[in-house]
Image (cartoon, rainbow, N blue to C red; front, side, top):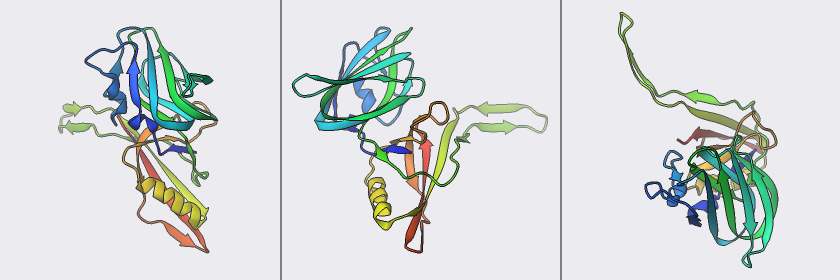
Length: 231
């Protein structure tokens, strides 16, 4: 299980070769995937210039109609360090760490005018394996008023997904490390529960909260985190 705590997109400089002025590329730096960047054509080339030279080993995407995506990673001398194919159906990809990355070029293509709602990139954090069998759970905030005679009024709200992950039998050193990463958060995270598998649980851009009742037993600790999908 992977969590991207430090998403470098927030401090990056972003530009694109095609931009609809009503949907600027800076929308990619907000916490709402529904607030999209939009191109003027069925392809887009987005340049992400990082605030500092960094190590990159993942890229995630949310709310896009692109059917294919590729990522080029470059150093400060414009040398191409690596190229990665991004699985847009899964919502991203993890790969071997690439060091000394100064900027990245994300190329999107599809059959209609391209849009994209969110990006996550940086150095992923490898969490311990969760104790429980993790399954996506629905959050249904639809308002329903149904009369005694069966006449209904519905204010439909898109279903959100939540997941709960329990971590047991971890050292206090690891507990403190994870706790401090979580406590320092200013934005939602990307969580990739099954990073080595496709189609089981796809990566999710989510608000991360910690259960208030961690436990300690026989010099080992347990903690629980909940993730709620951001729309």
